Image 1 (cartoon, rainbow, N blue to C red):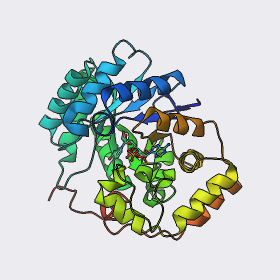
Image 2: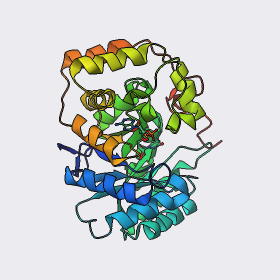
Image 3: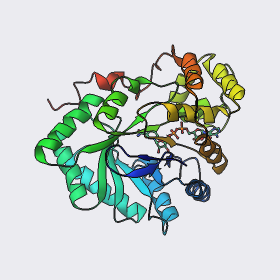
Image 4: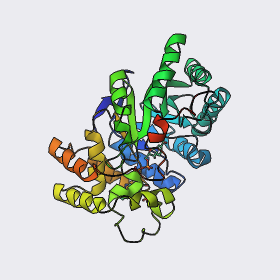
Length: 324
Ligand SMILES: NC(=O)c1ccc[n+]([C@@H]2O[C@H](COP(=O)([O-])OP(=O)(O)OC[C@H]3O[C@@H](n4cnc5c(N)ncnc54)[C@H](OP(=O)(O)O)[C@@H]3O)[C@@H](O)[C@H]2O)c1
């Protein structure tokens, strides 16, 4: 496993961040423990979770699994439902209780909200740092202009700044390449990227034109079905390229994110330990620039999904986020 700087914080983290969203959802606690163990054995020290995953059950499971192993881990969680100051403080207390921790390493705002009170939000985040309940604060799904706005307010008041943005990024979903990744690089903001496999679409298990395999995530997520419908022959071409390069499709998808400029850590999701083992192996493979370009050539004309909610055009243009 390689290690990277987490933006300009001075913190070092493993290149791979383990995503826990399926714990208590599509994998039970025993399998989740195997997933964490396989990841830690390979040097992963960076784990992502959120208060909103399975209504808190994910944090409870994660807390039990990392009990006695917490030292040296970089644990990030998110406040999901609201950006109100009072909720930010309360939600972190609840997350810490569920995970049986006295602090997390990173506390993020999960989503921007309409008419958010940015000043009150930043002050509350600063209070969580001052209270020693988190070491760093960050955000997820924020457009670049909003991070700039938040951090200007923090700077004026001497408050903790947002040090990372967690965003949706994969070979097939590339909205963040406009402004978000360049801003992060310019400002030393860490970028963690979720859904490197597009929830499994790039992991080789869906065949365009054929029924969605029973029991997969897409069988229960209309968003994924909509997304698949926009991908046409690109999936077959992507799978064929992976074969040519001697990789599994999911490994090529992760290696592609790894090769992309501006990315600190891809967040790897999985439902089984066999899946995470395959994904871990992707971190041993650096793509060449030619291989990277060959993937780009497949997806360059990929249209955004009609129902996609985190590919950024809407958030970039949104006046509704600001207080009236
Ligand atoms: N900040 C946010 O708004 C946000 C949003 C989403 C996720 N996240 C974070 O990012 C993490 C990753 O997201 P994600 O799980 O949605 O995306 P992902 O990593 O793109 O997809 C994971 C899914 O791909 C399938 N998969 C994984 N490895 C596979 C393999 N080797 N072979 C075949 N299929 C494989 C599994 O689907 P099956 O379950 O069908 O087997 C698994 O659930 C989450 O755990 C969470 O921590 C953050």
